[in-house]
Length: 227
Image 1: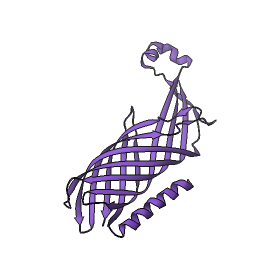
Image 2: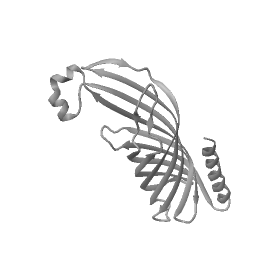
Image 3: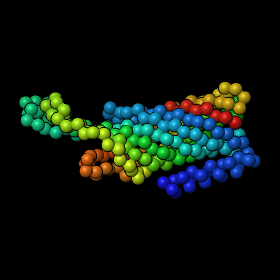
Image 4: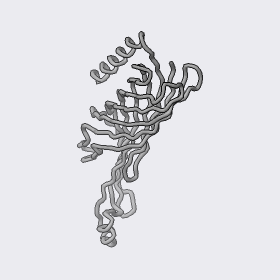
């Protein structure tokens, strides 16, 4: 965590020093995303940024983001009641007996973005590459055990602290337009891929909970920029 904040301060300092002689802007950004998998989930991130115009068309930026992520896992099993429908169980791989886990995680991230404006006009389209280094702060997990159509065990939600890291890459194509002098708004559809550097929680309460080491998301970034 200490190194994470040192890196953030370093990038902000570099941009502010260079910005004293060049064009500097700042703003806030919201990033809702949809995880592309079966029964995928909606996730959300938001934060602030500082951007530096390297040229009329090329912009670099960094900042700090807070992200919230929801994941759910289901592990099917067999109970005597499932034997009456064994053929369907074997065909679908699903039964009326299962363990279900829900995890709500909180992240802090350091984004680094490189944008290329397709025009030097105030209202313009642009291409954007986003790299973010994430650290998971905590996860609240809740598990239930169902058998034969009834809940036989309901684990109370517990909160656990993680020292878990992830990186994400995203490509976006957006449009920025001037709202009024020195204030603009942008909309940016994007597709992203995330990689988790530690993906298994072998705790006693929730054994062998696996987090996908690779996730693909569709998102829409919405931001406001002040110059």
